[in-house]
Image (tube, rainbow, N blue to C red):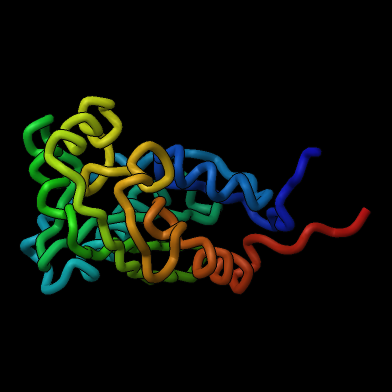
Length: 203
């Protein structure tokens, strides 16, 4: 049986991200969108007081850059970061760094923060959501085997909760979709408030 989401667009929406995970989350709700990844250079995390400020600022920069090409459409952007002891763990440079990230996270908790920005006409919504993630303590051999799958190489913190890396996660406290890359509850709430989307009309 084919299921489709409960929402429909009232305005054109552009997703400023090439992330297939964000695209899948939005599409599952019945929302149509165009994909235009931002090419803006991400700022230096050291220029911000907190990781939260960095994530929000990066999301804003991405949205502003894409809005130049789509001035009349709604723009949605997001930036997801993994934070351990106030240190931002980005996408690993290589196999060695990916393994180091996973060993650092193993058996402990960390935060996943997603900064989100919505630009539409004169409206600007910027917010962030934080989720605590608790990792199981697996052996270095198991972590190495996971890195060899290549999945960690394009993931912040070197793991993907929605795919193979899900076995690493023992528990989460907060939004699951936020860890995947887009906090759906808060995003949908803002899309509804700005009347970018609405409920599907009964046929």
